[in-house]
Length: 486
Image 1 (cartoon, rainbow, N blue to C red):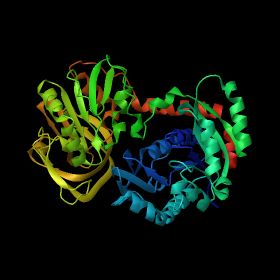
Image 2 (image 1 turned 30 degrees about the horizontal axis):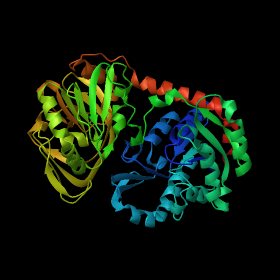
Image 3 (image 1 turned 45 degrees about the vertical axis):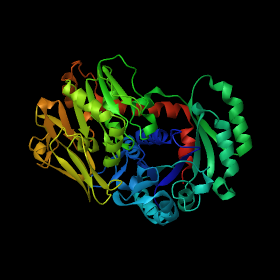
């Protein structure tokens, strides 16, 4: 028969669906229910590596953690990784297939419903309850034909829907009532009710608003979730959250240029959570501050495109000057490639085809190929023998003398990355590096400000998931939500 399922869809993007799914997964897990998350189609450059290879959106990896599971590619069978404003890499069942223009993908995406339903079927066969997350909004009726992410999936799989609205951004009454108004009758019939997210203040003042929505839509309210501060301590998936920088003036100053195709920026979350770290995301149009103790170049989905942006912003000069002045520099994955002497992508495997000189801090070059490395892994940072863990997701092969002084030895015996100037310059393909408490503490103490780490990052994630589940369980009629599943 398979697991029962419910689906959360949103009145728009970034209304908090991902964290609500994570909360419901943790609630079900604590009740002894075999639960799993599922998102038919995701668009994000923040990806997680699954055991055995394959990648999915990091939000689904967090949801899997909330459910007490290791992530699998079945949890997110279609992942779109933007390479430009109109182009994305298409990942199906964890494997990168090709890159496509947006218009072409939209015309052909209906063909992906079959692998989506197959992945969903495998999950249903192994669990008791599936919590499904939509993408974007069912109100985007111009995208309804061929849809596999929202109502197209819900109707094909016969999964009841709860619509989520975000009151913090304003207009939540209109967004929910308006969604009902633009949907066709068969789609609307799939919606069993709605929930309001991110409420601040006196809830009784919204009673009339709830009644109005219920009367106009015919949908029931499953409750109103308050603004939960613990949500800020959990990894975010969308780049819109990169304004979460801590105000200046505290501890080690670490600057992160906001590259146009920045990816896996949750690598920086452990540093963002450190009380003695002043992490600053530097937007276009602003220089990297001269007082920075360290600069981190995060991953990028299109290394050549972001190399061009780096030069256009003058950040290349800022980075080289800061390094000469004693600052530490770290390149993660694509950021590591930017620190070499040259990047070549003759076939356009990672964005636009071409080649260009890079920053030249490491004596190496990188050539993009059709092969993609995707795996969870760990190893030992050679400088101090510190254990590190994380995952690899990258295209391209780096070669050159710099690699003869590797950053770490991986668990399979191979070496990764490069290190220079006594550790002031580090490059690695290992995402998740700063989640390792011992390494993060060692690295922070080596900066000019010399502040220590006082954070147990992984324990903090678990505590935040439990607090999120507590808040959602107190606010929503969870019994009714789980009872709705079919």
